[in-house]
Amino acid sequence: MSLGVLLLVGAGAFIAGALLLAIRRAARVLYRARRRGDFGLALGRIGREVTVELEVVLGRVDAVRRDQLAPAEIVTLLVQTADTVGSAGQRVKTMAVPSGGAAVHDAVGHELLRASSALEAILDACIALEGTTQGDRVTRARKSLQWGHLNLVRVRESLMGHAAEAEAFATPGKQGWRASRI
Image (cartoon, rainbow, N blue to C red; front, side, top):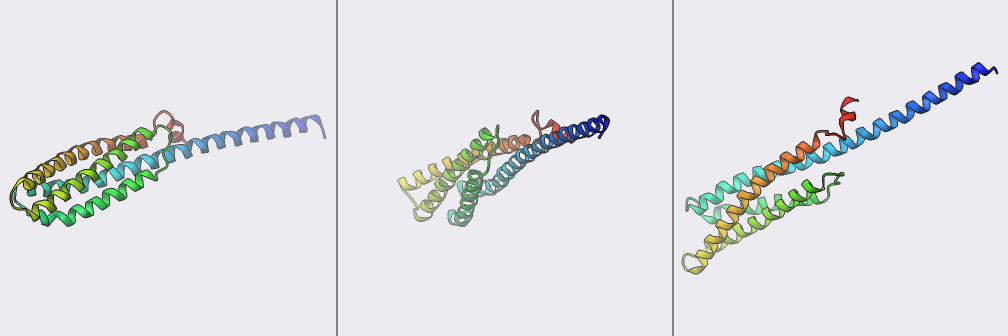
């Protein structure tokens, strides 16, 4: 073989190796961007779903607070919503968290725990109000109902903010700019 052919084969091998490394690096960037996006979209979706559930509950609890609805009529709704929030909390716990996503992940998890606590307080208050007609127990149940309602309002607002933050996390930032161009 001549020297020209060897140089040509060597140059071709070098170009193929460099191309292979570039493709591998681009695939890694794309994988990270997709993983980051999946996390943000899933976390945002969970936040939005729970927010919708809490909107319904807040309307009914407000009606109970104003004596427009009997407390026993929302017990089933409260139990279902508590189950929904609990399962959302479990889904958030099992999520794989990419780098930079721990803060929003922890914030959503914390808000879901607050929602569970508020729903339990409202449920206990509704059960107490249904079984009692007068006295100090009614006063405590009303205060518990008010506390739970206010906490659900705050949780709903926080979850809406965290859902938007998680969805913004899904859009590629500085780390994902290459993946968006590929």
